[in-house]
Length: 329
Image 1 (cartoon, rainbow, N blue to C red):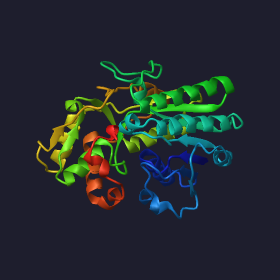
Image 2: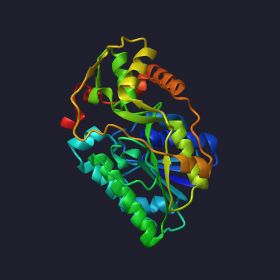
Image 3: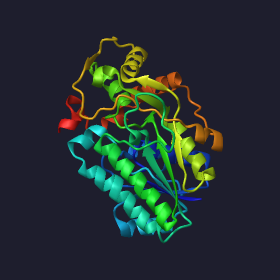
C-alpha cells in the first residue's frame, strides 16, 4: 500500500507515520508538509533513511505538486491543517487557506483518480457546544470558531464531491488528542512545560471546559482500521469516553509532577469558547471493532514523563506565545 500523508510533521501526522512504519513496514509513505506551524523534524529523524519513507516539502494548495504525489499513492490521509483555535481568532486567513482551500485542491485532483481513497481528518469541534448528550455522525454541524468552521467547511466540501463526482472518501472526526510530540501550544504540553519552569498555568473559563481526551496512538489505530476496513462515503466518530474538565487535567499534571496545586491562574476567556465537546463513537466500535486501548491515567503519566525527558524536542519551538494570549496577537 502506498500512502500520501499530508501534514506529516504535525502532532497526529507524525505519530501516524511512526505507527504505520512500525506495524506495516512494507507500506510506502510520502509525507508532504510545509514545515510551518507545528512542524518538527526531530520526531521523525529515526526514519529519515527508511527506504519506504519520503519527505516532500510543499503546500497542499500546490495543485501541480499534489497531482504528482496523488498519482503515486493509493490513499491520501489529510492531516494538514491549521489547528489552534486561539490563532484562528487572531487571524483566520491561514485556516481558510490550509483547511478549506487545501482540501479543495485535493478534491479537484481526485475527480480524475476515483479509485484512490481520501481519509479526511476532522474534529469534534464541528458540532460546537454540547450542553448534554453526545453527537453521533449525523448530528447537526454548529461550529463556533474560525478553526472549527474551516474544518466543517472542509467536511461539507468532501461530502459534496462524494455525492456529485463519486470520489472515494471517508471523513473521520476525533476528540482531543494528547501524547508525545504535541505542539507546546496545546493544553497538556503547555501545562507540563510551564510547570517544569515553575510558572503559573493559565486556565480559561475557570477550568470548566469539558473535553473528551484520547491518546494519539488510539486515534492513529482508529485511522488505520478505517483505512483497511472503512466504507467509502461514511463518517466515523472517534472518541474514548474520557470526559474531563480543564481544571481537573491541570491538577492531575501538577500532582504527577509534584508541583503545588495552586500553580495556576484563571485567565481571560477567549471569544466563542465552547463549554463542552462530546461524541458518540458507537458506530466505529460496532462496525469495525475498534476501541481505545490506553488508560487515561497511565497515558497522562507517560506523556508527562516524555516531555520531561525530551526538553530538547520542545525547546526547538518558539515558546514566546506562552507569555500572552494568542487570540489577541
